[in-house]
Length: 256
Image 1 (cartoon, helix red, strand yellow):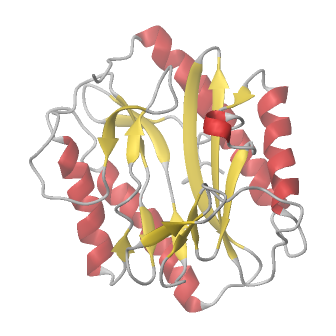
Image 2 (cartoon, rainbow, N blue to C red; image 1 turned 135 degrees about the vertical axis):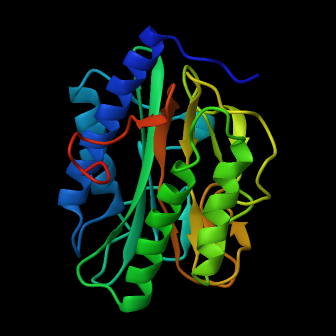
């Protein structure tokens, strides 16, 4: 069942989203060659706790980290580790969730580590743009699959592929709520979007084929062909006339 959020709930989710954005800003500033993903995890957790929230991911289903830190061909759910050291030219997807007074915000960004090659730069640009192509359709009376279709259409036009095993999701009191939000499919299907729905929309895009596999730790998900992958996500709430993005700082294009 898709829940409609009250004004009070949306207000709490705005604060959760703001804290997520603050954590992203701090992590972005800390990303450089030689840094471990565990250190980035500690940076994010510190910001979240200093703002009277808790990391949504820590302990969720047994996940050990406060963030997901996914390097190069890791699609999602990379576990932070002192052994995973960033190198010049890497890309790293950072996924952060924060829970404030019982309500969650969730957002992902993919960053360059130092200077990256043109192919990786284009992958980041296309994936971020695909998110905003989908968000154009995040407005009342559209179907949920209008968002999904717009994302896939843009990605395919740019000669990349969307991951199909993982999707976006509803969000609120629970980190993952109905509905599931695929990043592919035909337009005009699924639930009709209504004011007060809260959605975490998150294209995951591969430079090669769409297929992925989960490693033996039961979390880390990589591209099957070892191609690069990127991930961008925002939490949004549907309004009377469109949507508002909860997981960004005012005046910024993408959260930081």
